[in-house]
Image (cartoon, rainbow, N blue to C red):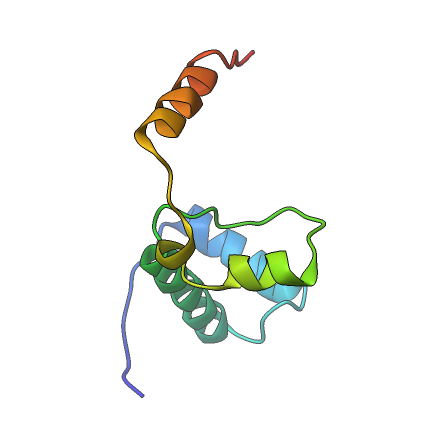
Length: 92
């Protein structure tokens, strides 16, 4: 295993320490390894949602766990429809 020295803003490090203090991770090193692992996974599946909201059937979950490039295909017309819907969303 390699050693890596990093610098974090005090506010961010305090937030990391609070998560560790709550017992979710045993150390800063464990926290940063897991955060990096999750980021790399999200990066590899760019374009997919990082969080999936269900409920889903067993078959749907298997599809969601697979590589999205193998399962996601949208026609141009469907993409245009989605873009129209997104433009109509009003944020307060």
